[in-house]
Image (cartoon, rainbow, N blue to C red; front, side, top):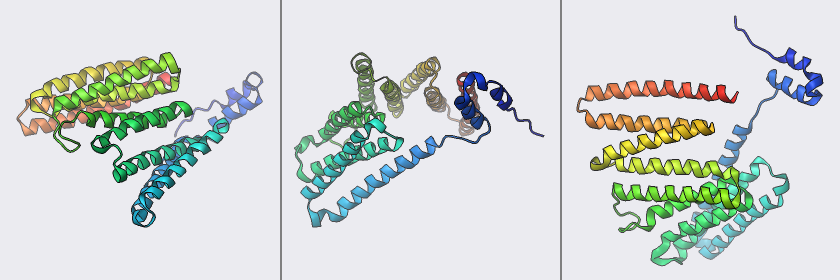
Length: 312
């Protein structure tokens, strides 16, 4: 026989203190009569934005010869401007869906810039600099609309620019582990400076976690880049473990579970690679992977439970 703890009698007793509206809302939640569908709505809205952006790309492909590149570029620009204008018009009564209308507009802008460059070659051999242009445009939009989605697009475009700008052999040319690690370190430096500038000048506190998450992942990226080559593998493993320890500490300090979870996973991966690189026995390597995987799953559940207790 199961036992269900209900606080409904206590909430009824506290009705004079809480007020009828607050008490009714808490009782409805206790009875499981109301529940949040926000995650589902976010997924549906994100999927819709992706589908519409994909559809725009298909329209471009199928109508390029018939309509012409200039007309198609203008149509995409008009559609993107419409998305931005709609969200701006509704800014005083914005809903969850508006952020994804804004995302659609930003994706249309990105697609349009890439399409224009591919058709008209305005930047010539410096074509990769359109990533920097997109990073600036999306950053301006992020601060104008207070949108973390646009900020994420801006940082992603900046990362693409950092990954290509200094490549001596072109977009498809070779790149060694040290160079990739240095580029990741450059991304980390940019994120830390952007976080500091945002805190001092812009005051957009909602952007701070975005900068911190990207900073952590750029740091991890530098370590994993070093791990791809034998000569720097040990240094890469040690770097990832050090970053994982720092990020886990930061996650517990700021009570942000995501930091702790992915830092722990990356740390386990680095430890496994370090051990496997030192072993030649296939059976022992398999045993280490099995044991570490089981231990990691158990630890992740324990971490999640700890955070639920802290935030309860």
